[in-house]
Image (cartoon, rainbow, N blue to C red; front, side, top):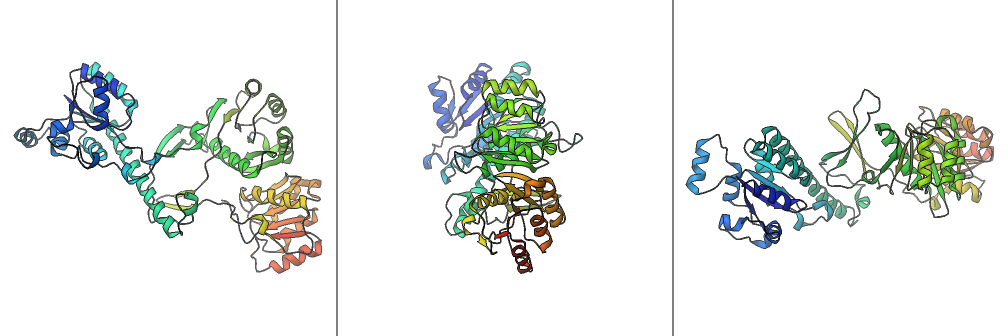
Length: 519
C-alpha cells in the first residue's frame, strides 16, 4: 500500500506518517513535507525519485506527472488500466494526504496552488479505490480504521471525497473573490485592498462555499432546523464568541444578537461613551448611551421594559458584579452579549438566570455584502452604511437644533436605520424613549413611537428612516412634543412638510437624501 503525503499544514503529519509506516505502508512525499519527514527520521521516497523528474520552476511543478496521476486515477476494476500501469512501470497510490496553501490568509499569485488541487480532485474522483484526506482532524480516525480493519471503508472514502471537493471548491471561490476585488478596485478608481472600497460594485458571478460552523438549537421556529455557516476560508467574529451559560443558541438568538452587537458598536463614538442596546425580533426596543454603563442599561430598559422581556441585551463594556446585579433586577433576557465579564459577575448572572445565554464577543466584522435567497434566485446588495456625514446635514426650517438636539438626532438616526421599516425613533438625552417599527404607514410608525414615549417625547428629537410623504407623520411627532426631526428628504411634498414643521415650531434636518430602509 502506498500513500502520497504533500501538505502545507503539517500539523499531525509526522504521527500519521509513523502510523502508516508501522502498518507497512510505503510513503511518498515532496517539498516541505519531505523535509519534515526527513527531519523526523521517517523513511519515505521523494516524488522526484519516483517520477525521475526533478522539481522545477521554484516548486511550481513537482507532482504534475503521469507516474503520480496514473497511480491515483487508475480504475482498478478495469484490466486495461492495470495493464497500462504495469507496462509503464507505474505503481498504484492508495491514499493521498494533501491540504492546500492558505490562500485566504495572504492572497497572492504564489499562493494559488495547482498541483495540490489536481491531486486532491484526482483522488476524490477515484474514491472507489483511493482515499483522500485534506483535514488533519481525519488523520486519527483513518489510522484507527486501518488498524482495526486493514483498509479504509467505502463509506469513509466517500465522506473524505466529499470533504475534498468542498475543500477545493472553497479554495477556488476564494481565488475568484480575490480576483473580483482586484478588478472592482480598479473599476472603482483604485480603492486598493479595502473590501469596503469596492462593495458598491458587484461582480458578474459570486461563488460562495459555506462550511457549517455551529449547529443551532432550532431555526426561527422549533420545527425548523438551524445552523450557522461561515464562508469557507474566512474568519467570522462569531468564531471567537464564547458562551458561558444558558441553553444552546437558536437561529433567532444568533440573528438578534448580531443585530444588537453591531448597533452597540455603531453607537459608541469614544471611550467616554458606553452604549447598551436591547433587541427584540431584530428591532431595538431600548437603546441608550451614557458615561456610566449601569446607567446606560437602566436608560435602555426604560424605553420599553415590557418588550425587553426575553430579548437580547448587548452591553458595550465589561460586565462587573455591580452591572450584573443591575441586570438581575431587570426582566430576564434570552441572551446577554458583552466584550468581557468579571468572574463574580458571571457567577451572579448564571445563578440568577440559568436559561440566559451569556456571550463574550470581539468587535464584529464589518458587513460587506448581504444575501437574500428567493428560491433559486438571490438578491445581493452591499451592506447599508452611513455614508453622509452628519456635519453635512442641512437644516431646512427656521428653528435650528440645539447642541443636545444634534446629539439626539444623530443617535435617533442610527437607531432608526437599524429598525425594520417603516421606522421612527424618538430620542432624548441619548436615550431612545419610543420606537415605531415595521409599519406599512409612516404616520402609524410615528404614532406608535410617541405613544411609547408618552411624556418623554416632549423636548425630544426623532428620526425617520425615509422621507415623510405627507406632513401627517411629522405632525404626529410635533403634537407629542418632539422639537427636532431628521429625515432623508426627497419627497415631492418636502415643501409642505417643511412648512408644517415651521408652523409647529420644530427644527427639521435633511440627511442628504440618504434613506435607510430595512426589511
